[in-house]
Length: 114
Length: 111
Image (cartoon, rainbow over all chains, first blue to last red; front, side, top):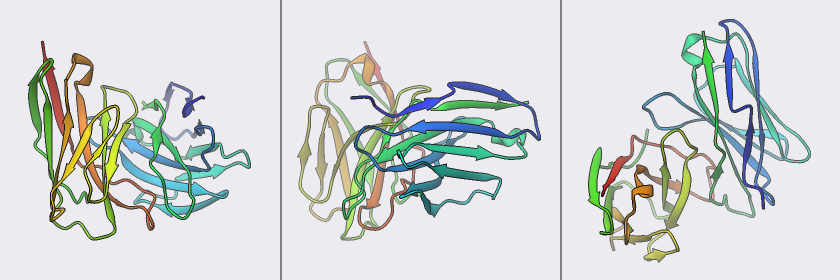
């Protein structure tokens, strides 16, 4: 049973560029959440996707957008990259059956903006 | 903001029990206590969660006080691989999907 997978593992981009990160949820999960973790900090919630819609969003600008596909996989897009966007981006999956069950995290994508 | 407070760091000898405390004095009746850990540069790993009863699984035990204002995560026989940052999180399962992480406790298991 595959866990949560993310790609790519590492990425280096230049300021102003755009980036797309990908996540495949754990088998049987239908919900994907994205988190940003700056060095030395705890993960910060970006947004959550359920039934292909953004259900909840954290305090992140519109430069951060996402998508969920019919197979429950998800993408995180960041436009107009800033140096401060350098972080570990984590994807977490779970499932919903009248309650939100525990989230399982992927290994993350390390984004470096130069 | 995180609704929990945890010590910044703790040490434990290998083979001994590690007891990690967490205060959540403003927890409401429908909020669960969750524990995750994060080994350096990896994604957080789910450990255990509970509402008011003590819980145990293959990784750890969770002891929640009767007034639910604090809890303790117990790793019964700590190993070097348990060195990680441990996060205590309160969450309403029926309401919000998101996890609000604080700074956690850096547990170092020493040989």
